[in-house]
Length: 249
Image (cartoon, rainbow, N blue to C red; front, side):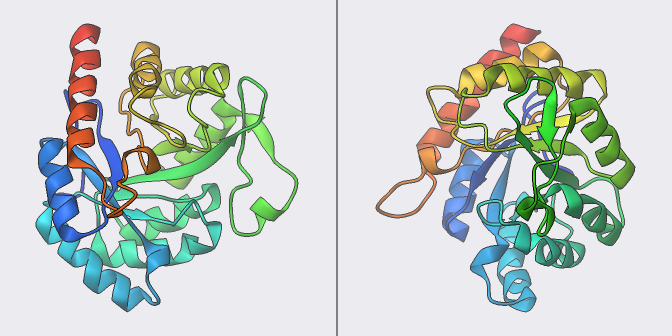
């Protein structure tokens, strides 16, 4: 079972939520396989239930599973680590303090393990107090280079930069992208990304030279009636991605 994601031009992998097995398959096909499908641990009452159901998503998408927290809930951190150890998915979502546990329990380095850090309002700094207890305390603002070094120490793969609120933190996001590029680290912009701002958000990371980019596009492409992520919107995102990457060559 392949434990590393597929990327457009070896550079960009989309991350969207899957509402069902059929929805996951449709989105996977729309992105030509260059995608991970988010399934949220918070939606399950037990590890056993999550593992049993998520195995079906793995089987339907060649293991393009992204084990999610659930709205970035830090209290899901330990459950995500436990079920990911069993499932060996291609992608794991974590808070800053949970990344080391996930990597250790996975027992391999191929799966992408991100770690959530937040904007601070100060260019060049991020808040790393995103864990179950630390998120309840005053923000811990550190230079983004320090955050990346700490995450490398813990075995994480990428910064999950959330909540971006689209381009509300553009200057901060640009500095994070530049730091990721300079320190050979991956980047996952998250929060408020839609079909209107996606291209610019991706372009900033590409222009900065980030090696691998995994943008999360969630509520903006979910059908309000069905709860499904719209495969046609995923196809649009795929076309935008190919356009940006073609221009970057």
